[in-house]
Amino acid sequence: MNNFIFLGPPGAGKGSLAVKVAEAYKIPHISTGDIFRANIKAQTPLGVKVKAIIDSGSLVSDELTFELVKDRLSQDDCKNGYILDGFPRTIRQAEMLEELAADAKVVNFEIKDEIVIRRLSTRRVCKSCGANYNTLTLKPKKEGVCDKCGGELYQRDDDKQESILHRMDVYREQTEPLINFYKGKGKITNLDAAIETDVLLKEFQKIF
Ligand code: ADP
Ligand code: ZN
Image (cartoon, protein in one colour):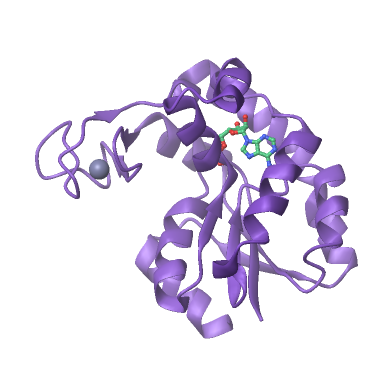
């Protein structure tokens, strides 16, 4: 079973690798951040509720987030596997997930803080399709415009300096303890996430 949990700090490249793994293994990429952002954009009741929390870089409640994930994992396309990107993010979430995904393999993205800060502050995202770019390392062909769909590129509110530092604190306090949680269960594989996504994919394919 190809059930993967991608664990690591913001800016580690979980989402970028997840897009490639999803394609290569034909399994869905489930990003709780993307789900929340889609709801914010569509101004759903959920989106309205979580917008301020997300912009500031804090976490949405465990219960609410878990319900979302539980619902998503019950859908048909998850039968042959899935990639969870950005969930779980707290011990409580991990405990709840154990009941649904005891067999999942946890991939831990290891990366230095300074690289994370540089990557996040230079990240740009397409307003229409959500594709990620970077003003230093992954420039679009035309500045400010998405290569894939022509949409407008913008900087996420939580990618502004203040929120970045807050997200890193939140990661350290609430999410990093998951490494030991999963180590104790013998489920963790570490990946050196400082390398380019295509190279990272090759590493991943060697292991899984
Ligand atoms: P990052 O780039 O930091 O990995 P994500 O796109 O995964 O960001 O998530 C953006 C925001 O969405 C988080 O800062 C948080 O507010 C909210 N969020 C995403 N996943 C979770 C989760 N599992 N639990 C609580 N909040 C979450
Ligand atoms: Zn786009």
